[in-house]
Length: 95
Image (cartoon, rainbow, N blue to C red; front, side, top):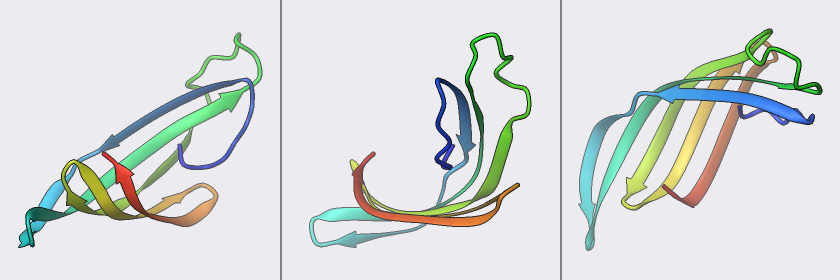
């Protein structure tokens, strides 16, 4: 999950489907621009006796990626869940 909940135990699952919608050559590398609808779900809990998939927090959205393999050059994730909308962005992380 992308939300910062903290406790002793956690359950998290994510799924996304990436689709390259534009590719181009930039100097000596190939760059792909991708769009990826995603769903993230999870929960944190204090006791190991808690069933981990009860009361899951779920977020769905769409991600945009600029990729010069093997690295992601930049990304923007826009999601919406029970706590409202959120946007995450970043530059230059290993894929």
